[in-house]
Image (cartoon, rainbow, N blue to C red):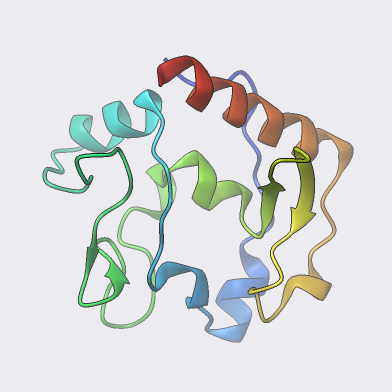
Length: 126
């Protein structure tokens, strides 16, 4: 099952700055659709027992040594929406304060709706 809408924040900010800050010590929750895409591409052992993205040596398992994402085209929904995250318990979309370039992102109403879809999806899968 995949989310109805895809939040696709413009990753050009991260690429232009050479930033992969969000890929360190990540606690990214994976949807069933995320897992299916990654498994369908032949990836294994990328999730923890509680359905989060695996870290190796404090970095996302898919973060390459050059700082780029090794699964960018099929990356998890939460990665696509970052730095737009859901503040809980208020359930309010906000730009993550830990993102060093958050001021350069301009999420749209469509991005916020897509993030809500991701949240509903994760809750339905629990």
